[in-house]
Image (cartoon, rainbow, N blue to C red; front, top):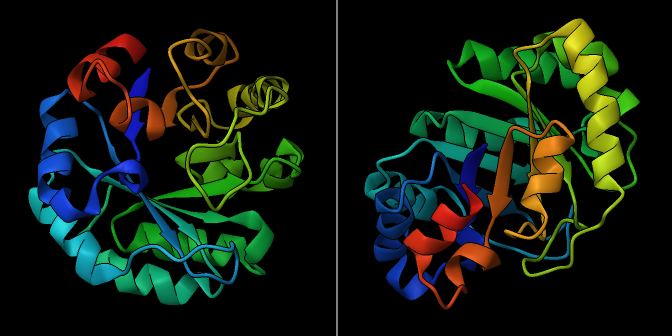
Length: 213
């Protein structure tokens, strides 16, 4: 299981410190939530701040776009060479074209499904994807409760992946803790995003990541 702490829960007054803390704490990816205030009712960060995150990080970036006009944002963040850029299927008219564009930039393409979107929505795109991100909360804000139906959704998606593209990873984002990560693993999930559990945990960042692993 790969652990991708979300910097959405970090202290932005000490962002470099908090990015370094998760990297030193043996995270696998640094998850960056980009929200535009249109696709979701929240506004987060742009390339100036993400450049600072990239400079502080010693682990690869995992950029999750929650935006309208995905292509514009892909072009904006591609120079930072993240490991993954993921975009929402619900907001993209030409997903296959955008997948090809992301890969042509040397970045692994990923697609995100909100809680109401069935896994079958990406069936005909799976052979071209490196990862599918299942939201286990409604996108927009950190600290929400885990939606249990994502477990069945992950199982259905895993069955499709095994037939079409076994190398494609499944990521889950939202409400992940040490109490439900075992269930996610059993459902076939490969990567989890955890923000509040890592950054707000009284045991400390490194210990929180270790408990998830």
